[in-house]
Image (tube, rainbow, N blue to C red; front, top):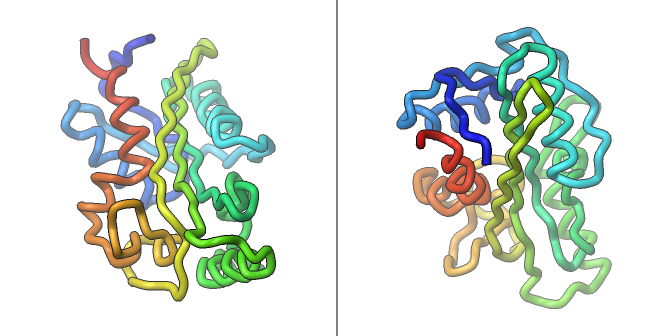
Length: 202
């Protein structure tokens, strides 16, 4: 595994919330995070059908454009009763002409489960894949997930995205009801990040 030796890491995202979350995770290692938006980079088309494929597109595009190592992630919810959907299309299910509407996306998810008469518990996984790419084309991949189930009705106003309908295994509350620090301790992104940090330091 190639080690990351620099003190600044380009995070291939235009999402301020995601940048802040990753910046906080990197801070203990003395690494400063800057975003693709800071560098004025366009967002590449995500044309792959897997989390790792789309993360690779974003990471390599940013590394090639800037000459800096770049970190990208792709994440989403995979619902077993929907054959793994929405998966890589998690955000797409929320798209409207006026921006993303995750309440609509959650309603769509539940309606499709009802239509399919999916058995209970309606198991699902939140998935996250990090790709760290270097300008020479090398990359390292780190995948994480958290298992749980989709519940209804929506519960909680914390978090974002599909959090109000995802109840992680071992809990009787949803991510939407969970304290952010607890969620960040057990989340799919935390799982992937715990593997990513092995490239920092000796």
